[in-house]
Length: 370
Image (cartoon, rainbow, N blue to C red):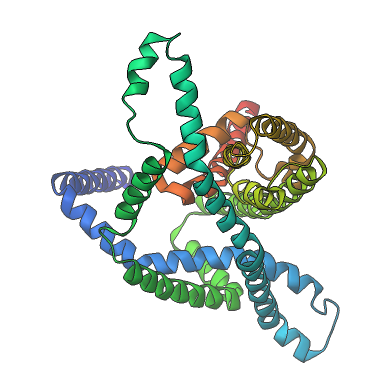
C-alpha cells in the first residue's frame, strides 16, 4: 500500500513537472519576460547577499583581532558592529586608492593608447603595402583600406558611442544602479549583523523539510563553495596587487617607458584568471610600440618571464589549493562564464566550476572506494 502511494505521488509529480515545462516552452517569450521582471525585483537582494559574503571575509578577520580575549560587555556587544564598520572603511579606502592612484593611471593609459593608435595603424598599413608586392593576395585587401589611422579611430569611437548611449539613457541607468547598490548594501549589512540568527532559522527550516542525508549533502556543498569562493577572492586580489607591483618595479629597473601607467593596468587585468595578465600585456605592447618596436617586443618577453615566475612560485603560495582546478578547466570556466555573463561570469566562473569539480572529485573517489 505504501509503495503504491509512493508510485502515485511520483507519477503526479512527474506529470506536473512535464506540464510546467510544456507551459514554459509554449509560452517562452512570456516566461522570459516574467523572469526578467522577477530578476529586476530580486537582483538587489542577490547583490546584497554577494556583498555580505565578500564583506564577511573582512568581518571575520576584524572579529579575530577586536579584543579577542576581552570579557567586557561593551566590547562583546560592539564586536559585530565595529567589525562591519571597519570592513566598510577598508572597502572605502580601497575605492579611494583606486580613484586617486590607479584610475588616473588607467585614464592616462587609455589616452596615450588613443593618441598613439593612428601612427601605429599608419605604420602597419605602410608595412603591409611594402610587402604586398611579395604577397599578391594581400595587395587587394590592403588597397581596400581607404581610411587612415585618425579616420579609423574616429569611426570606432562613433560606433562605441552609439552602442553605449544610443538606446539607454546613461543618467537614468547610473541613477538606477546607485539605488540598487544602496539597497543591496543595506540588505548585505542586515545579513551580516544577524547572520547567526539567520543560520539558526535556515537550519530549522532545513530540518523540517529536508531529509538528514540530503541535508548533510547540502551543508557539504555550501561549505565547499564557501571555502572555494573565499580563498579565490582573497587570493586573486592578493595576486593582482603583487603582480602589478612586480610589473611596475621590473619595468622601472629595465627602463621600459610608461612603467607607472602599464603596471597598474597589468595588476587590474590580472583579476581575470589565466588570461588577464596577457590581456594587459597586449595593451602595454600597443602603447610601447608607439615609441619603439624593439622595446615593445622586449616588454612581451619580460611579461612572459614574469608570468611564468608568478604562475609557478607566487600563485601557488598566494591562492594555494583553494581552487584546485586543472588549467584546462580554468580556461573553459573563463570562456563559458564570459560568454554567458560577461565580466561577472569571467570573474566568478572559475570558483563556481572549482566548487563543482571538488564535489565531483570527492564523490568519484568515494564511489571508487566502495
